Length: 386
Image 1 (cartoon, rainbow, N blue to C red):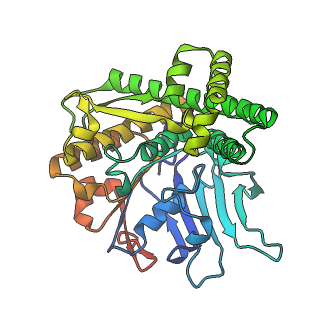
Image 2 (cartoon, one colour):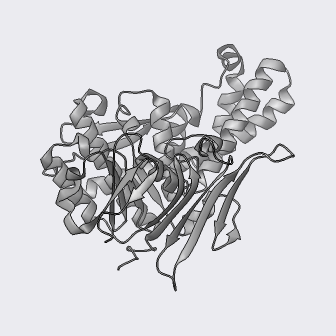
Image 3 (cartoon, rainbow, N blue to C red):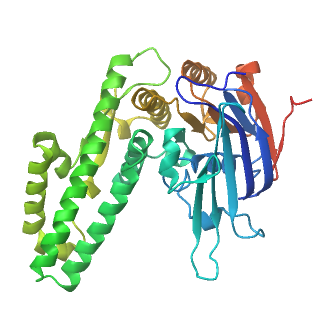
């Protein structure tokens, strides 16, 4: 069994305890492709979510950790992944302990039995990208949805990005509160605006680097004959325009000046109107050269799949680790030609792929390349294990 994947080791075992509807789960993994099949509500997506917790953030559902604990269970949960074989592998673990007598809940992270500060530490061993049904309306939805998608793209190549975004959002809340409660306190406003500017420029630069690299990779590898159209991507926003022209320190100075001049306007609006928190990800359907939002529903789904596949290639190129790819209910929405094209495109990548679907026939074309895992009522059945 090949447990390595073009840089990094593939998962060979998944264990979960009291996670969502799974009481005790121990899943050995022998293939690059794992297809989780079963009825709606069986717990297929829950397993993808468990794996997604080994990336920075709150997982593919963006849920509170307390909500992931099994109903009727002890209130906490634990998930672990074994990477590679017994001799050269690693074991990553994460979990949640409910509030104790001091009222504090705990997120646990471990690498080979040793505590880690946060899920950021897992990025040394594992990178993860995913596509879920709630992204289907991404191109026509709100800019905030595309911004969260953008930050996931960045997180997969720069695990520290989430910390910068979180710090920036806290600084913005502090500024908004000061403008509301103490608008004449220039000294404190100057201080918090300095922090907003430093963090905002850092966030904008990280986003810009990832998007420019992604757009360049797509341009170099695009193929109009492929079933998934190529996309062109860029950023739109006042701060994005600023960092595209000026060096970081000059951009910070100009950003601080804009914040100072905009205090009255921002106080009236109740929020900061200039900065990385207003960035939008602009996507165009490359072959047709039209905004993604104007493409048909089917074209948008195909475009999004092509974008995620390109991002997976970028993650491997930048990190040296072939990412795990999590695809929730993607194959069911594709016609046979595009489904075959998806499997071919995934086969060309070297990372492990986890997919979900109600019908095992969706994955028949994968043949012996895939482990077909039946999920029912929070339990798993391995049809080919006997």
